[in-house]
Image (tube, rainbow over all chains, first blue to last red; front, top):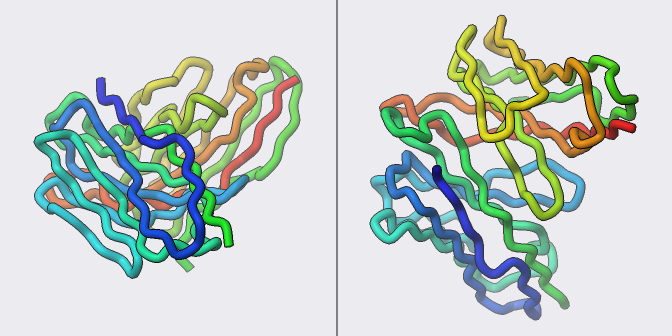
Length: 116
Length: 116
């Protein structure tokens, strides 16, 4: 069974700092990995999607990397802003033919606070 | 506008009274899924559907039913709700990518259910 772990559970940084969020997964037979943002009481917004054949994806100040063989992904946020404060979740999608096909397994999330 | 809608957004009910939470998407997505989110447990998948008339259990299917009679709709049915089903529920949809893997997930706004 796929298990996804996110470290740290919470992070508080001053505005302007660059930061890294970590996601690890136990089964490397994945189709892709997604990073989401969730604001309090709201739904999830997709940030970046990395296919299993890719090493990284970038969108604005966000960069996500994937090392499938070691079961790790990182989300790098450059020049953090107070508006980045939210919970960040990673989720792993199973590939066709695998035991997790059709399933999306989430980590517990990292609660990020960026203070002015 | 591409979106996933859920109704109702908030629901308070009593133990044993059957209820249905509706989910609809307008993106012609093949894949739809239901999750529940609980403090300390994160997001857990309840049921998912790869296409019309094709449904499968996620990690926590007990006490729930689903059906997929039309591509756009994927209702979640609680035949006899119990207090341990009090939770925040999310519906999501996506297309199926190359090799039938899951693509970017689009989430609904959530339904907060309280069972007394």
